Image: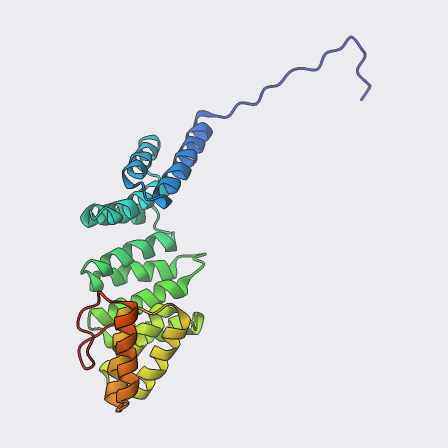
Length: 243
């Protein structure tokens, strides 16, 4: 190819984004603002941003998920469930989205129904954290009285993530319920080492020590509850507890 002479001109090509690209970019910009408002605790402003994103793209899974989180924090749990479900239906291959809806179901009194969604999460191709969904499935199976499934899922979760706090706490509860107190102690100790304590976990630890006859250890856990969770109810040893 010959060189251009001084009199020849190079055509001026201007590359413009398509309307679809501009729309997607607009949604992402709004979602960034939504997340910022949410992190700052400005729930009303965050909700407005999320709904603005949905006006641009009614099928935005990210916008629906953020809206669900916002609605949950506002105490509008039924609306949050609708948003989580819509996101899950729009993204059947997203393990995280299926896990989100399963988690909402389990936390809102639908433990048995949640298992279908956790199964979908676990089976989703490319899902980076199937152990989390498996731990949730085991915990919710235990809540719904499906002890065999709970044991299976929890042990599989721990095989993938040995320090998974949900799985460890639920295994401690499962073993306690089956009067396997030494095993329950081992699991609750691992749970306390894996993540910050909760009043419920400390109460379960106290119960376990009470059943094992170590009254001093049981009392120490009760003292921790009173010191770390002064608003906790029923902190005497021997009551009911969960992880």
